[in-house]
Length: 256
Image 1: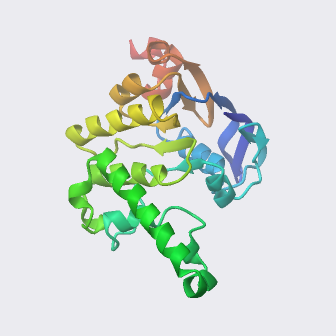
Image 2 (image 1 turned 30 degrees about the vertical axis):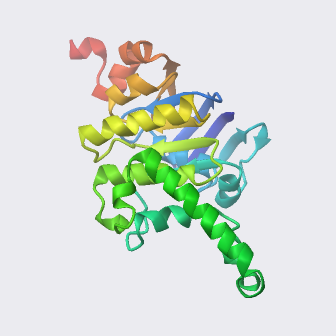
Image 3 (image 1 turned 60 degrees about the vertical axis):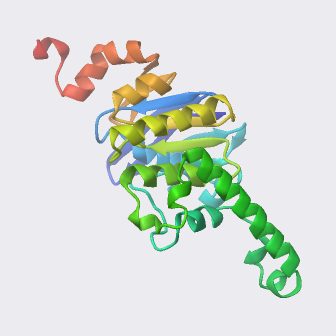
């Protein structure tokens, strides 16, 4: 589904991403781990179209999207979330979901004057989908709450819900466990697994919570210094000496 080939992102003389090559298979939850500064979030920014690479190629569903704008990638079903949620904090939770779908009739001034029936119909359908999403996420009790008042875990669930309001096929999840209490984290894991197994969503997941990675992800890719260090199942990656060295900053022999 996604192919990243020899991707490079330079800032001056510093390479945040250095000849990075990886693939993400459709129907999988691919885990992306690595120490702070490994280049994981920069890689997400490149894949999502927030920045353009210095060199290299990105292919999505067989199409070269290396220079495609972020909004066009979004409309092709490539969607991302953020480590710090980007909710519209003064809007209600329900309104945050309803404003996500693109190309709604109400966005047109002409339609608001001359096709108000179409506008009203679109809004009813969008509201129905938003309520279905809230029910799935178990957030109906906060539907009318301002999104800025939610807990960290509820905001992460809302971020996931906003991806569900699009035609997402590949979702880039940036540290969904960050700032989430253990109870809501288990719920978040459950919802991601259901979306993957029952609804066909493909995920790439950046995460430092190794318990979450172990539960959800196969394969697991470890990055270090801007490039892929190793890819495999969780146990193989976790026990690789190069991974231990990348995280600890010393060789296994020195650590011993």
